[in-house]
Image 1 (tube, helix red, strand yellow):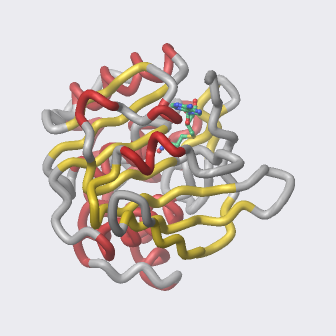
Image 2: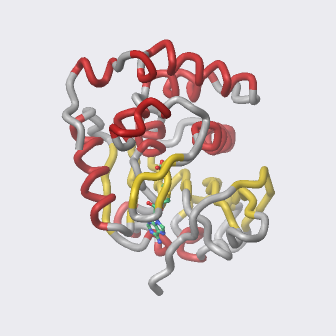
Length: 225
Ligand code: SAH
């Protein structure tokens, strides 16, 4: 892991604030408009969440490999999913992310919500995410190792849940861990077919309202049930 210093957070050349600002301009052109989301996207040093060998590509609007067959999501998708969540839950106090991966999405959410719990199933990625979030000073994010298709019962219920790997169907456990009125953003579908982002609102004990948003491409959500 890269050593985190004031200088490395600041970045230089392709990892500088100017480069990051250009990415945010591109996100605005693509339709991201929530000022809080744009502010945090401008702040979080994405180059520290990927391998140093690829840092010159950190501020391209692209998904990049992070090892173990996984990827860090495309910045536009990170921004879009965050914006969708905030559109439905104004000031989230307790949020769950499933699929910590690089921890970039977690850091973005960590800058916007009171408490974030994030679950990762691959031990190496879990350990790495815990270290980087700690070094960057996030004290409102709790990282967990486990199969997040079961959610994270200990800290439930959640105002918001964001899933960053795609199941074939929405896991029932996640719906059960949403507060009434809470919202889940989740990609659903097999990779070879069209995956779509779904917005799930828990209306009462039994009822959920599901609407579809754009087509996406996420790695499959592993299910160890
Ligand atoms: N949010 C991440 C995206 C990572 S890709 C980021 O910003 O980088 C999806 C991640 O979900 C991978 O790290 C993968 O290991 C993890 N994953 C897949 N199935 C999972 C499950 N059942 N529980 C928890 N994590 C899972």
